[in-house]
Image 1 (cartoon, rainbow, N blue to C red):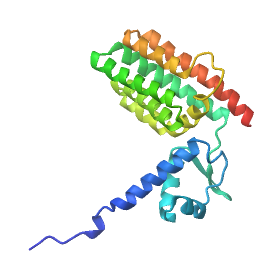
Image 2 (cartoon, one colour; image 1 turned 180 degrees about the vertical axis):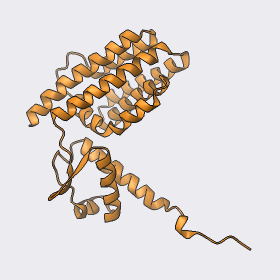
Image 3 (cartoon, one colour; image 1 turned 90 degrees about the vertical axis):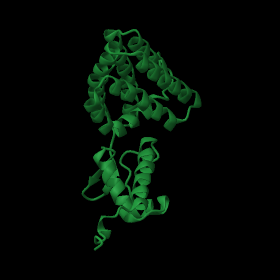
Image 4 (tube, rainbow, N blue to C red; image 1 turned 180 degrees about the horizontal axis):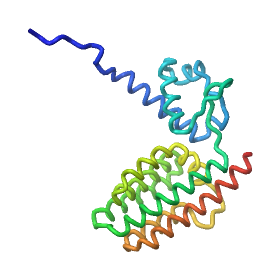
Length: 227
């Protein structure tokens, strides 16, 4: 006797793909500033723009809400979360604690294989800066840090950073293209890289802290101007 078919357990791959694509497109639109802080996210309009159903849009909005990119207001419904300096300051403080510890731990345990992987990530970052494509640059920066965290064995810390990654990317979109920086973002990454390769935990920690201090000052100025 054949086992009964449980059609309610079958996975609808197309629907999952649509939801993930919708999340990705909306996330990028928020990070790039296409949807400004406080902008209403109207379901019908988004359905027309993305060519998907309302259920897909609602699921995507829930995901972005969990990431802190969207907030639901009683009368307005879902809107793009406001990114102001008090919120940004907290994010930079959290990053400074987690990223500095990860870089120091990475420097202590840097192996030839890790250095090779980090060298490749830095080369990818250099290419991203040369391309001047915002999303490529954001992805390469995220990958550079991912190598540091995972190589340091700090997977839990990386999970925390990933939960903040949407808001971190919004801030990076502001700071990466800033003009008149005394030290470029890529130069900061080089300093972190060289400290890790030199097996110097103190220098790695200091390089991360200096980088984030510089980025925070730029973000503070930019956000105050917007306000």
